[in-house]
Length: 316
Image 1 (cartoon, helix red, strand yellow):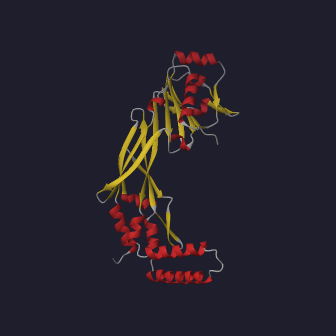
Image 2 (cartoon, one colour):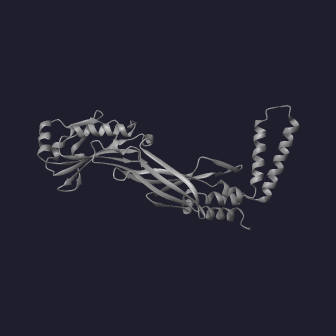
Image 3 (cartoon, helix red, strand yellow):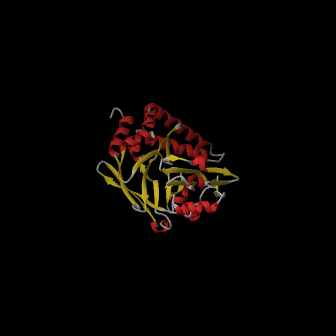
């Protein structure tokens, strides 16, 4: 699947399309970060200049390469608002053709060409930051996003909009779990012994191997006596991302988008692993008029830790 590699290439494509349509128009670019789509958009006023240009084209429609194109939309804006895409657009031999002659009876219309963007292409466009600090009964994360070089986006376009740009805050929760987990030391000892058994390749170290197996059985027995498995299963349910969102709040220029487990996992039992951190993704909008956004993500760490303790130590 062909994609536009970066915003610079999208700008160049937009300029080429804009240079071809010779009439009164307003050009803009829109970057839809959630879908990795870049949109060239032109609002055309149908007047004498447009009519002369279309008539000069004669029977030749406007054609462009379909590589990287996700979608094309054409809307009549005046005198009636309606979509006319299928009336004026055709596709053949990896080319898309627009027959502007069918737009001559309009007063104004808009053409949108949607391009697939490389997902990492926005990294060079926006500087982002998420920095934590202690706050009341938890932590707050200062969120920021800023267009690095907004002037480079202005050439030939009336507006450039960056929609739903993502900024992620990584919230560490392992300490809250470790403090409440009654068998943390036993788990660590079991894991250490298992690692030794796997790494010990000396076939003559029979005595040491037998001793490790005996220690492993004893620790497992102590683990079973404490019966934490039901509590750990309840904790797994509690740590579902949608539940964790109850402990975070986002204000100012950012919107809460989603939560997921971080990449780091800690194995607390042979068949149960828990996340070491939660990744909270927020989103914001940027434009040439508003090239920077700031916000706060509040994490209720104390309330979260208390609930974890209640699950793992219901009698305490």
